[in-house]
Length: 236
Ligand code: NAP
Image (cartoon, rainbow, N blue to C red; front, side, top):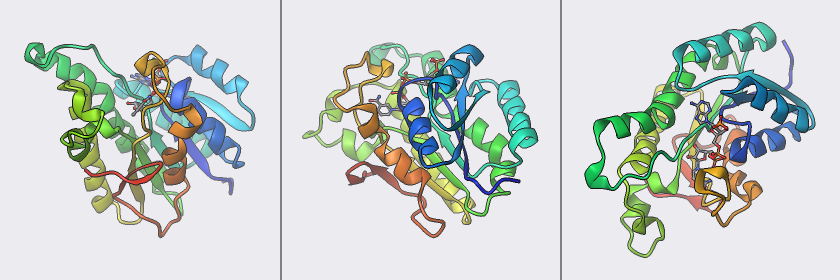
């Protein structure tokens, strides 16, 4: 087994995930670039420098996730860092028109996806001497931020995406308690120009990945069960 740090980033064929892969590979790590589409993943991996490998993983699909875990076990033997980054904004539906199906669609990727992937990768992370999990959430998932009328986030009224991230935050907090040897933390990238928001975000992808990279590289005795953005602690 290799001594290098081995990281998997989901949803990494573009946007914040791709930039996270680029930055972690620049540290000399072996980085597995997760993509639900094999071709998009291979193209993105080929464009990046360092020890970057495309791994096909659709976070909505049990079989795809199981097969990615099997491939990682066979080729690399373990995982040190898991970045659950894949996410969708979902359809814009006025809250009063939202049905359970609208909710299910967004939760399937943003909330159940990270649980599906984490559950499948835990045996590989258990083999690490310094296992770390980063959940990519959002300030929109913070009840503290979205209920503060001075924030831009408080003006966005939506049932689906924000609540999918709020649930992810609680899931992370509970994983942190269940896995005391692990560092399990939540990153809020901040409003970043990517396809998720039609590139309307005000930050670059490098700024948007500062918190993700900080948590992916956290020390084995560093913080766990925290929610941070690039400026510091975010209220739950
Ligand atoms: P993006 O550019 O749209 O990238 C999203 C990535 O997730 C793409 O690679 C996409 O793959 C992938 N994905 C979607 N569904 C998937 C699935 N079922 N399985 C595997 N991959 C899937 O958006 P982004 O802004 O980089 O978003 C990354 C994360 O940051 C998300 O969790 C998002 O909620 C969070 N975030 C973003 C912002 C922001 O301002 N951009 C702010 C706060 C939080 P395809 O190309 O195949 O669709």
